[in-house]
Image (tube, rainbow, N blue to C red; front, side):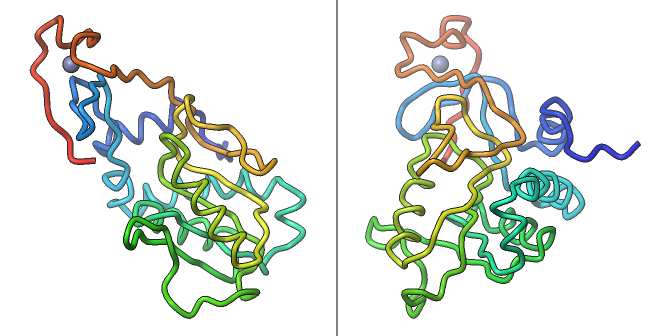
Length: 202
Ligand SMILES: [Zn+2]
């Protein structure tokens, strides 16, 4: 039987197999420690895997009447480069008319120049992973400033410490991850167990 939306476990297996989910002892650039690390582009480097993940997420959106009724005149929006393959995959599956991605310039999230007020279709914001929710929040503010409406929001992985809705729109995900982050080395279980640590760039 075809599995329409893969379970959280089978998505985690895909992420492990591709190297996108890693276990061990990691030190983030902000000095926090964690026994796990997600590097989502490693899953999206394989076209077939990228397709499976994006199609699965798109099915969650298609179930929403407010979204399915507006197809294909919607836009898929990525807050940053990591979400671009997700946005293209979801666009393909839903046959949405537009894609946009934001970039950080001078500390501000923005689209390329000449995207004008009123040109952006009703939006689904998608990302590869939602950690704090800040990127999604900034993108929603950007889209609203251009006069567009948010009709959906989602990611492949959402940390369970992140918000589960934005502007009354539920944040959909294939995995809700029970995140363990230690603010300092003194609290870190892996430090106490003397597990060798890797420093990660993002
Ligand atoms: Zn540690």
